[in-house]
Structure formats: C-alpha cells, structure tokens
Image 1 (cartoon, one colour):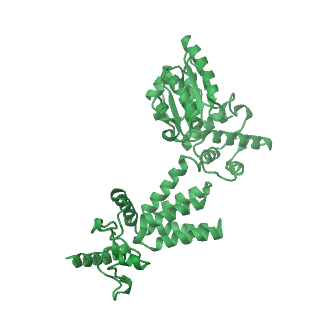
Image 2 (image 1 turned 135 degrees about the horizontal axis):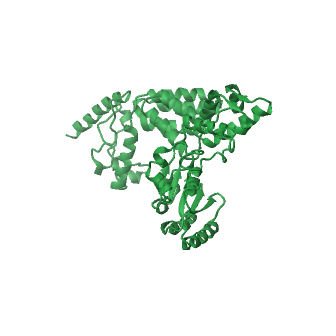
Image 3 (image 1 turned 90 degrees about the horizontal axis):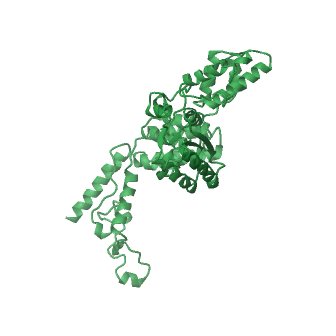
Length: 425
C-alpha cells in the first residue's frame, strides 16, 4: 500500500512545501517540464523516490531507474545509449538512481559527462550527506534538495487519505480508524511515510482478520509492541547524535547529554563507543579543572565492561552527569597542540648537556649530566631551572585557567615560574 499511495503529482505531495512545493523554483521547474538534475537527500521514507516519480509525471521525458546497489557501469552505458537515441528524437530522459551514495567513483564518473550535456536529467536519492557521498564534480552539476522527515500532522494526512481511498487504499475494506490511533501510528513512524503506511496496512489486516472493522489505540499498541528509533549507526545520524552528546557535556547540560547518550544506546549504538568518547572528553575538555574527571570516565568504562547491559548503564549515566557538571578547561589539550606546533617549527632540538643520561665514565667526561640538580632531593622539592632545549628559552605551552582545581594549579605554577625568572636575573 505504501507504493500504491505514493503521491503522483505536486498537488498530491504532502510536506516539503519550502523545498519542492508548487511555489518554489524547483516546483515551478517541475511543472514546466524543466526539472534540473538534482540530488535528493533525506532519511528513509521522506519522499525521495516520490519526488523523482513526480518529476516524471509532470514531464514528457522517458523515465529510467537504477538501484545503485545492483547496477554497474555497463547498466549506466545501456541507459545512456537509449537516452542519446531519445535526445536525437527530441525527447528527454530522467534517470533516477536510488541510493546513489553506493555508486563508486567510476560509476559516478560514467554519469558525469551525460549529466553535463543534458543527455540525462539525473535524480539521485541518498540518505547520506551528499558532500561526502557524491563526487564533487557530479555534485556541482546538480541541485541538492534536502528533505526533512515528515511531521506527525503530515503523516496523519497521508494515513487518512489511505483509509479513505477506495482505489489505492483501504476505502473498500470498510475499516474505521480512530484519530488517536492514526496519531499514534504517525508518531511511531518517526517521519517515515513508508513505515507509517506499512503499519496501517498491517493494522488493517489484523483488525479485519478477527472480524472487527474498528481500530483503536489499543490495536496500534498491540501492532507496534516495541518502538525502534530511526537511526543508522554507520551513517550521518550517528555522527549528528554523537556531536550533540559531546556538545551537551561541553555546555554543562547533564539533561541533554544523558538524553543524547541514551538515544544512541537505545537505537543500537555500542556503549563502548560512548565511553571511549567520554575518556577523550575528560582530558580534552576538562583536564586539570577537575582531575577526577578522567578517573570517573575510566571507572565507568571498567564498570560497564564488568557489568554489561542493563546494570552497566548506571555507572555510565553517573559519569555522563559528572563530566557534564565538571568545570571545563582545554588548557592541557591546547598545551599538547602548542608543543606539537613548536616541534614542527623548530625540529629536533638537542637535549641540554645537564639533562643527558651519563651511564659511562666517558660520557661523564664529555659533560653529559654535568650541572644537573635533582629537584626531588632538594629541601623544597624544587630548583628554579628550566628543562626545555636552550633554543626555546622561556617558552611556555601550558596556560592553566582559573576554573575548578586548575585555579590552584595556576596560582602554584605562577609562583614557580616567577622564581625561575628571578633566578635568571
């Protein structure tokens, strides 16, 4: 039924009014049979294939389709040959490539010249960010149309249409579905029209099979049983959610951080991935502002590997909240970056003689280790000296903040650096 109920014209299209609606430039071009080549990007069930078929419906063009999963360069060449014949006869060809991100570079390159010359009008559908999934040369010759997931109200329009339509939907089956039940289906579908219509058809089959003609909220709950979140742990949404998770901890929002964390886990992501990110975060974004942050992240990682799911999620949540509310400092991370920049700039500077290892009498006679004072053996545990290569002089890389425990570090380090500076005068 999802395929039967697919909108056939722009007037039937539900949602996406600001992207391909009748009042947009692309909508006007489709109506005028001037649709450009385009990459239609969006999550499953948002209407990518529907847009391609609407282009064909408003056009006199020959419509060809390929699945990037199954097609090869030879299939592209066969379609191009037909398209060239059609072009000679004054007719356009619209080529729809589903999952175009699965085409390799050679396959995309095979399309490029024919898109450029107008032999085919390409409509590529992808769930992946086309900036990463489509060759830059091909992408530059196409308009990118991003389709968002359909809203609950928009899905309800499609569902009511399907219940009432006697030709393509359920109209002839005499089924009545409560508005509350339709709304529940729409919410469960999470923006995916195909999923919503498939569930409605399943609900109708179950309801009519037991001799009933009325479907209510309880019937939907029975049909859905367990909600599955829309998520591709190898695709863009994985990186969007993990980005939201990290930025929420960085922004000291434990509620949002825990929300994004559990969203990912409930959708099937590996908690060990999140724990690894937390270990990095504890040093990169907190550092010495709270030295216990790394201990907490490490303990959560160890506890989870010992306990597993579901009990291991408790110390994980404990650590997420701790890292979120901890004072933040990137001083240690910035110091690392500064040191690497200096090494790249100045190269492998020699170790000062007094810092060199002197395991033999000969090396001692050459001056290795001469003048070195063991700070740990001094009364204060400190001597006012620098230990960098001589060429770097008084360079500093670590600049502690005034946040959390690092404020004490900053005060202590300032005194030590002042004593070193005074000793050189």
